[in-house]
Length: 447
Image (cartoon, rainbow, N blue to C red):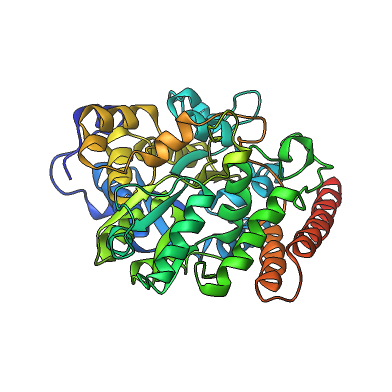
């Protein structure tokens, strides 16, 4: 790959002519990065590391997949305790509370760049990502990379078969319900809609979209002692809607993670709530025309008829501390992170995957070249994040043990979907059990 001169200068790379001697290659400082993505995302990250390695001879980045984000998180904790964690780990948004509380284990990314004497300004990143991964002081804890939010994908062919306007996706939950039931009545698809990442979309994104708290103490961002606030009338209404809709398959539950995407890609379900980062796989594998719409909202919860913004998801890049880790290693980490946040990489990543451009420069470059004009729908997640109303509960959360709390939520919701308890009982139990996990987390971090 031929690197732009500006990028080479930014990385401080001096390319030597000819092949590097074997001895020189063996002297490279190795930088270990654990990634949490497979498929196209994993392939691209591996490619970016290979490009970096080929462009200089001082460092060698080794990319490894240690399982999905929860499994990788557990492996990283074990590696840290053993004194040999990776230099960089890609961790999803749900793990941010745990990572923030791991005092001494993490080197804030702002500090990593400072140690390397490389310029770094958190303001270079889009505001929703900057706010999510920074402290109130402005210090950035981790570097946003695969930034996403939840959107609606819909099957235009199925909409046409049902007599619906294929160029007008439903915007509100009443419109989604009506469209899904029409699709089933006309047998345009086997199910009306499904959702991936149930807790992230139907609980966390739903809360942000309606400016509802998930818990006390500024959604956990003000420190220890927070309690969950899940058993609310609005959350009960949302869950009861899903329970009712599954009776005629106008809604079909597709599991806790990303498995439901297959129901949409195969044509089984006509609408899908998913991360905007799922666009690449849909574009590659779906055999029908599809569109992108904003995440639905309840109009009676909107302020002045305008919904609130959704919140970001995806993952960021965290830097681990470790015994005997050298200044030279941290310099290599900073140089590689500098490569990943460069405009050529950020724009390539966003174009190919459907994740958002994480930096203002990348977003501007894509806008200036007309990318969003030429690719209708690709601006939907950006518009949804920027044009909606901001509120005190739209900026995300920072709870410890949130991965386990998500599992608790899933367990209780699944019982409701199976008719074993009411929506109110499910949310009450999720709130009670989740708050108990927060208390255990607080006690663990006091010791």
